[in-house]
Length: 80
Image 1 (cartoon, rainbow, N blue to C red):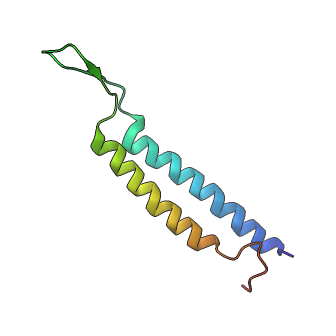
Image 2: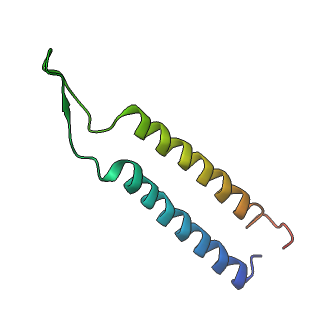
């Protein structure tokens, strides 16, 4: 059985991960709304550049790893 304090810490941790995920998305991708038009072909691309998506994915991977390690054992009967 999960104790109340442990469940509360888990909930705060999940909310923190959600908040950090939204902040990372906003920092890397959320503010970019412009599209790029190639002057020669007229092709439109965007709004994101490859480096923005790669940076966001890498940061989210780090965040997921930290989040997984921080909640390991919660709800699985592991000792505190």
